[in-house]
Length: 98
Image 1 (cartoon, rainbow, N blue to C red):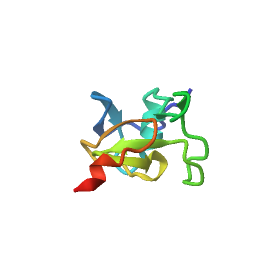
Image 2: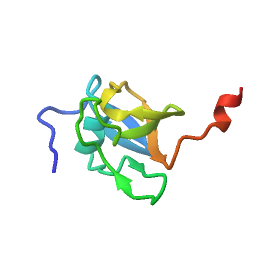
Image 3: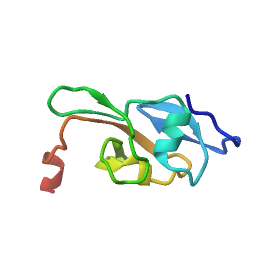
Image 4: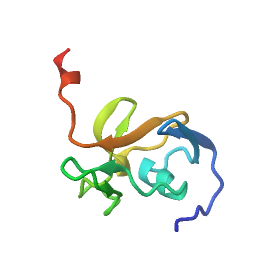
């Protein structure tokens, strides 16, 4: 569905799998270009969701980035070695107790 117009220059890790990316592009763009379309699962039904607006107005691209939950993938610039994963359900608050 999505294709790159320029070659990649780094890799990121999504759900434990190395994916090609370009430093500086948004995480959402890198994931879409790598064929990832489901970024999160809804809290109630577990339905998969992917990015909608790609400009930070919606929240369908929420992911976990470097352990931080509820991060909008469209607003995160790729850096080499970035680690991210799918946001599953609602944000957990047990991590905020520290």
